[in-house]
Image 1 (cartoon, rainbow, N blue to C red):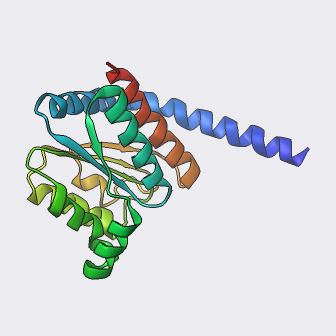
Image 2 (cartoon, rainbow, N blue to C red):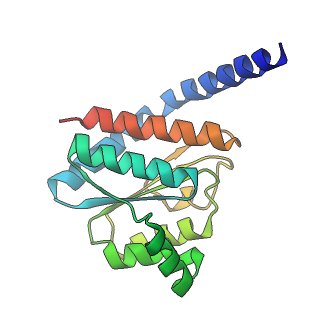
Length: 182
């Protein structure tokens, strides 16, 4: 009986949190417009996250490229991460990826549950230096986290649970892809 209660409560809490995301319709429309601008100008979207958020970045980049014909790029290859982290420090591997692969006018999408990871913060700062057209952040946990302060369009999930935050990030990003399908 306790297990049934856990799952009922878990899904009910997730559903409530997901319903709160209706407040982000304007941001989702803004993200869609940014991605259409990127596509029109033949630029790319660089997408990064740590842990589960890196997996979401991979999934989103694949679907963005395949279904929406917007170039989505991730740099989550283990050899690249370990090379750059070894030479420049883990807090700088994404920054260096952007420095090496990013171009003026590109877009950065950052997925970070906490919004406090140093490598993610440094990535946003580097994207500004590379004159990216937009920085889109998806975060959770604390509302005024450092990553959210660096974005042009920000989606913040009001939860301290990694799985709730990450699952909602994925749902929102893939809804944008579905809105762009060609």
